[in-house]
Length: 392
Ligand code: GDP
Image (cartoon, rainbow, N blue to C red; front, side, top):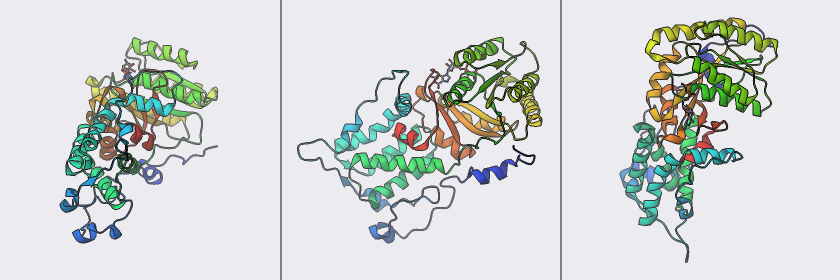
């Protein structure tokens, strides 16, 4: 049984979970003597990119790695450069394949510099420039793009990689390492039920995401209760009910126009009485009445907080197609409640898959879920290596 005193200040929890603002590249670049930098003996095999990006050494960057085709064969790694698969959605699809399929637009963007390098049969300065441009086009932000490319280039040179597939893998490793430095989502509390507020502006995919998160919990044998706390829109309540029915989970709802905090109160009480594992609360997102919405959300949060030993948790839903706008949204919603993690939706509709990195860097809030389609199973827990493999 969780005792009182479970709740910890946000800052303290961040320290414990490693969730923090260790912005990769925030530190000053280390002074590195060019000669030492050049020498293979002095190059570490894995430069931790979150600590200090190496300064760009132009001599080194101008070096060209010749790509050697095997006898009678194609260039190494070329077989992986085929066009991305069409976005078909078989229900029984493997989870990692689902993410790969969903992020095909971003992957297509990243495949171009590799294809060109294969045509030129060389990893040359143009390749590193093109990769930097591609990261920027994928919305990572300029600094992150430069840091990732610098760290990968170091690794490629220090390890003497000449195979395109190995070079790709070096990029993936650097991307995953950077994302891991942003911290992990908060762990579930000891106390049941876990209360999850799903917040975000209208249209980002909030209700759908609430349902999909519920479906993920159900798939892991959890008892799920939904709360339709967007009482402002009748359609919102109906949509939540429709999803709850499909998933086979109960839903707490009041009349349209009712007090959403009252819905929260009833849902938490019902969740406790019915021994639910998780209560998922869909909330309103009409931002044109920003002040009222934030006051309403704060009130809902306080109501749930008072009913529980542990703190409720909040997942902010951001539409990946709106890119870095999400950073502002996180700041606004963060004023009303403690945002523990982010669900990034509609990754299938954009080539801006790098926004995961921008958000992690700028906000220090980890991405916990990514949405790659409209189907129930198209929301996946975010795994940095899996994401990096889908991206590059
Ligand atoms: P809300 O207003 O924030 O509650 O948004 P909804 O949940 O009603 O979703 C708005 C639209 O976005 C719906 O058509 C959803 O099917 C769609 N949507 C949600 N998530 C995704 C996603 O990951 N990919 C795609 N392609 N569409 C999504």
